[in-house]
Length: 539
Image (cartoon, rainbow, N blue to C red; front, side, top):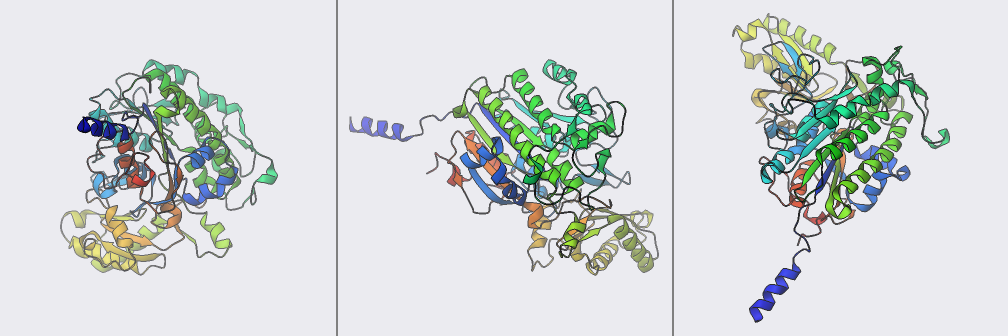
């Protein structure tokens, strides 16, 4: 009898329910760095604000690799691993055989379904070398758990869907949500009905107005450093016609650079919930939504602009609608888990930084490549092609291909020249990356982001506040400095212990933590760990 009672005591000491949540809502906000969210938080009273107040909130997560960009960020969130394992090193990589840059998820064998496929564009996860959370769920549930990922960007939707989910993204040529033949052979009825609503066309007749009174916005609306982007003008209200007389690609691009994109994604997510029956049974499902409009506004207007302030307020509203739809689908909060993070942060417009006394500058990669090519020509007497993609330098040309010069010597000479430039901390040839000294800790970050078949022949580290961009306006991201790599992480819902957690964590922990909440194993190549301090059932 005593053994029986002891067994009962152990049984009742276990969590009340070991069931996984019916639905997991995985949210990424493109370019929402920690600083942006912390500055915005006092005015967030909708879904985003409530999530921060009621969830396990980590304001200070930091990516541990060097090039903070959309494609690697989403791949890291999805796989729990760094680029040296998942292989997604940047948005674009250099195709040496073709002699041109292509998007990292390019796959000519899987074109866009029912649409045009621009050459070298993202269409499938074939280049993603690590298992994702979505794939692990599909394997764990033997194909019964459903996964739908939605974004305005294919390079965000594809890693969140993995190889076995569904990925849908916005096509700026047609104003529709599309996928590729990797994910579907025909457009499902629910997506056909959604696209028939033509929400992007409806945006043509609208203007982007300020949500709050002008006195509530900090700084100036009209900043000379902001561009005249997509026919929208620099000040509110912004027209979304793109200079057209009727809806078309230019107006769809303007629509994407506005908070109206948030609303379209929420409507698409609601359609997916209903069409796929997400959260309707005890087999766990995942709905992943990546809000891309924040990044589009960031690049055009900067993180301190009125446009970004208003975008965050409208995101707060849109997220409230998304979370409410997810709760209804799951049958209540008790059956729902939510994870929120971002793929990267971002720099201020460098000219604005410089005006305030920050040692900032715009680094033009085209001009830098020309200077390096001239140096190599003078040193080796042969033509060497040079392509700079963010912090990666790709070298080519007939002399290198034919072995007329020592390729390693050329790479090292390129690194030596780059190291002497005023915008550079250091540069290193790929031959020496594994053994290079690392007094500032930044070489380790570069190593974690290096994948030999796709990364550059030479890599370099720009100085802080150097914004790499060949466009004379707007801003960018892609360095290991905190303004680019520091992002928030939030968990909420079933099995989560709410609170403010101030320790710095790594976004590779997101997928393992969700795996724990989903009562399943981690993605195969995961480097992170579950955040046990935020799990209600942890001991």
